[in-house]
Length: 172
Image 1 (cartoon, helix red, strand yellow):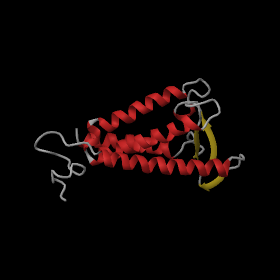
Image 2: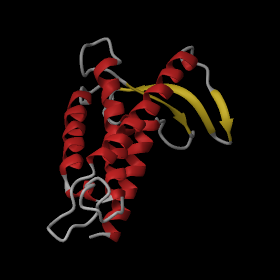
Image 3: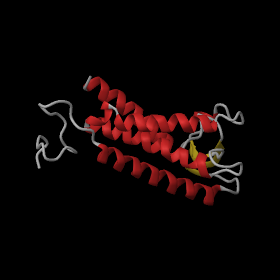
Image 4: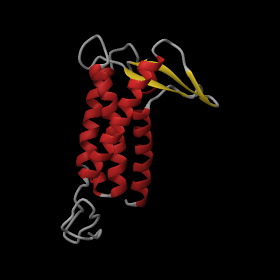
């Protein structure tokens, strides 16, 4: 089908009858891929790096296990803000899915990256802790040694946000 075929709203960007439909399938696909890769790499990191050692990769890049109970870059660790970060992130995921952002291919991919990253870290907060539901710690393991330790979910959020800005500048 062509990109302008009104029968397939998933690939249709613009419509003479109004705004283009949301590309929720693309949004969901990107989000699921990010969550899957994130959780697989975190499981690997916990199993491989749990004894305190690290793996030198290249240059200053090393894999080294860390747990984050706070917000991004471990801000607020130990202050009990983890559950609040979870609630805000879930709201952001819902907003991105239903907003006009998801009406273009680039916007849907950007929203999927952000949503998948948020959900990947939410899974950690929900299930990777001993203090109950939503009181877990996010698994971080990518250490550049000159930047806070992060994970694949964090990369999804950052790359998605940058792409969202680019898409917004190109399609106001």
